[in-house]
Length: 518
Image (cartoon, rainbow, N blue to C red; front, side, top):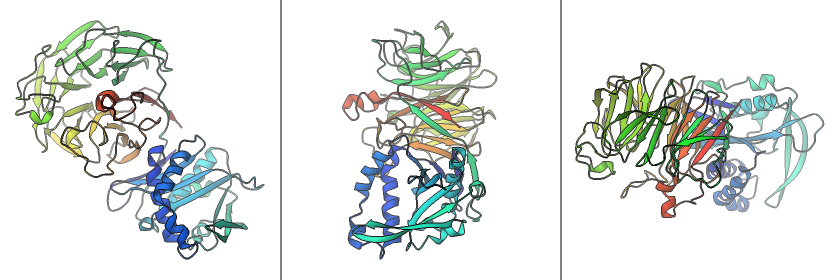
């Protein structure tokens, strides 16, 4: 379950389920809220010693527990601004089955309707999981406890609790029915409520690789009409095919690629493989029979580039110089992002004739610094992941610049689901940085996945790279694909982005499946 709201003015904010990478942000909200709300109630000595560092360690432990349910509110620019914990009632109370364990909102966002959004979301989750009633405990001297009374909570019981060497009164409020509360979205004019069912379970051991086989790293995946997953990797068997349940099917491509980079499957199940170091795009049957080659093997275009570092490009050129990915138009036209050594998008006819190219080095509209990913939207517009400009540029099929989206951290690949939602694999700033470059801020995000609705509103975001080896977090997201069930496959270039230099555990996952849950 996901519940979302729109902050006005400014960028959208979302309520989403917390991940282990959120531990420090959650700790910050808890510490700052406690110090603001409980000064004069809890001892100053306790509050001053209540540290973000200590709480972050504890939250990291809690967020790894499967029974832990925590929603966080996140805004662009502000990060996590509040959270709510919830689940089954913990004391065995005879009348109440569910419990709101915690609710914290940063002082600057209190009074905006966010607390009401949290309670509504929690009530809906409890109802969905067969907990028809709810209890919440709060300090009797908490100046905000009237919030629960305003929402219809009835005072149930009072007890004493020891905090920082003081005995304090604690009050429980209860709701005997949750249906109206779950529908009681904020009426504040600062928010507009949207809901969506975006919830995934991460599985980083999904693929059943044959005994003795390995992949150095997975660069990309693609899904065919039977929901078989083609895994493009830099091991000895560059194209491995798996059923949706992870069972191994077949492999091909041994000895055919200089360096696998991107893979795309068309509606007829033709397989398009982008080989960046070979400067080619090749089209195969699902069994690996070569059908078409775009570009000249081993021969880069003349762009003045002297290496794979995009900063050495001097001018735009023809196809290809380290091409990156392929997208297909509804009529079969082939769009290629090109790439590390060029700054162009090329459009070919289905039979391989070059129709047009656009782009040049730079940061302006229609210019690129590593056009790394590409997808064609349901309305036929072309979305290009302009990685080092930290944006997605949107074009007409003929290359006319339409607009851009910038709430992105070094996007590597983009993909659309059946409902037109945009999924973005973002490399972030904790891996794969070019020599001499630095993150925009010390706490800039690491690798993550973001989801946007067709209007460009942020729906969900997870990862961040705080614990990149943990399931659900990321080190170097490089590609994302979606099957017909809405399950996601996220590949990561862990070895080349850092493991070969000792920057991350080399056993870190290079492919994760995210199973969609209702």
